[in-house]
Image (tube, rainbow, N blue to C red; front, side):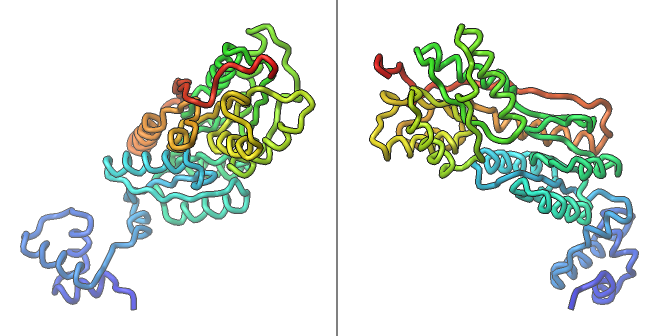
Length: 335
């Protein structure tokens, strides 16, 4: 049987109003009475209803975080940073992994709204924008993470994907690679990295060709499958720029299974600089996103919006950093 506020009041020998004052830390009463009520609450394992607090207009001190895939190390590392930063500010985080599935996105948004979260951090792509428009219309604070807010008019926080794509491609071109395949994801961030890829090609005086572009969903298995296609090309590329570390590592695995040496036979650059980049052999050259700084910033922004309201929507861009490791080198002369 569920314990109620009435059960606590009866066992403590006080009124319901007194129990409510203890829960909300309001009103004047003897310290002995407060301690007695708290002891009874602990004995009965009574936890005040978050929904009840919300219905009285009080904050629930919770944030809703929606990510596309928690198995992707970038999002798991980002989620951990967000949780740590929120904890420092007295907030809890409810996280949902949507798989960028419209039904899941709808289901989790409704769930978090029922939980009366104080604000949303949206890292999933949400093809059905009306769902997010409903959050905006309800006046619930929302910040986009790694996503462009588009016409929503809310603050977005991301890395400068265009510059990241440009830097990754420039690194390979400067080593002497001309035939470089880029593997993108079906996300706006990848599209911006592709624009940077094209800009670098033009800057170095090479012609950009559509056949250099491949697209897949981020996973190591998909990276291996992409390598199969690369390996069968008539003019085999000497380098690959994968717009995600998971894809890059899949390419490495595929290359090694076919007896290729990295970087002697194929240079590879990833994107994100997750923990995988330093644990794979050879260690992965990649474009680093400042995950900790971005996670802390998104929490600071959403908490400020919860407490003071959103004044002006901003687009906050963090600078990416190319980290050269062991998967890139000069191409073979006959490559």
